[in-house]
Length: 165
Image (cartoon, rainbow, N blue to C red; front, side, top):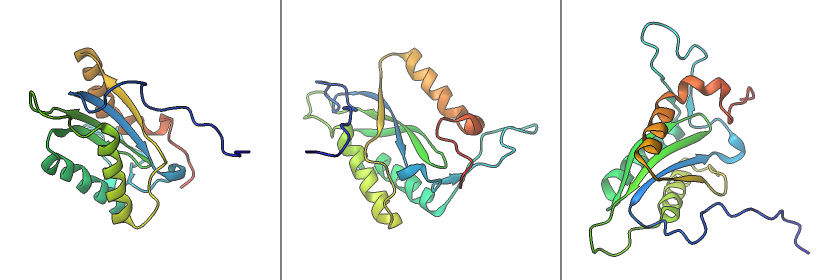
């Protein structure tokens, strides 16, 4: 008998994740450990209340991996990203040339990203899977862009926030 809990599939059934389009991806650290960045308690205060995060060394590896994707992954662009203390949000566009063969599926892109950052940080960095949302309209795109812009400001109310270190 299998003692492992049954996991619900996380990808949309029968959807081709290598097709042209934009995807909003959230990847959480293992056990939601705050390993990637630090957000000061007073974020959002003052005249220039811009959301600021300070990256840890591991956060810099994550940033490096994102920059690498943008310059070395044909047909893959990270349009926007935010590195939070225990998760990262990515807005990824897959755009292969007209008539070209399929681009890398989103699962492969994220798998390579997780593998690189785990190897670089020398720790089991990520949870097993990731959350994705297929962007289907300009309104959806704009809403996610705004969400990513303001995520650090809402950190204390974030679903992934915890007081524990």
